[in-house]
Length: 185
Image 1 (cartoon, rainbow, N blue to C red):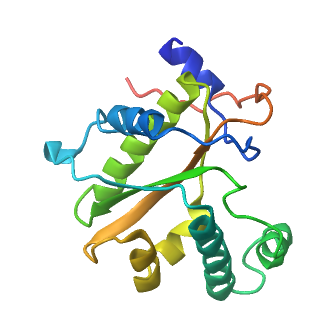
Image 2: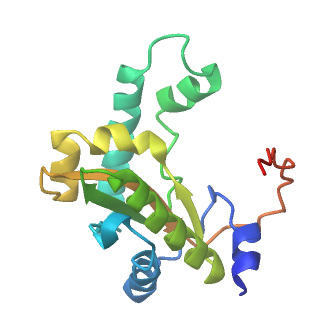
């Protein structure tokens, strides 16, 4: 797959087949991920791969509860609140794997992790896999309990929780708005 094809074809996947993603395929995604640029070439990424369904369920439940705790009434769309309150809503959409990209805090650490995440998601698309960055999990993963669940040292910040799996259905193209460009010559 050509790079522009992956860029144009990558979409957030929220429906997965139950087929597990092999460790070797996940390692390939991480290998692509670490090719991203990083500030001062620190390459300070840390990857945690979760394929344990019971742990994914626990993280989903705890993350939903944490977000409900943090959201002031009236500050988020009612539909989101209803999803988070629904015990049947699985934050990870029953994806077979979660890759969490963490980094030590520092200048441009979050940006470095985001660049690595984009590489991972583009390579996943090229391999026929679906991904979705689950931002709603971040606040709980940052807690002490979240760190313990991922076996993360306290100095690492979980930045990018990305679910990975085989899409249950193809993604139709999504129209994009024209870019707003200000030219300054």
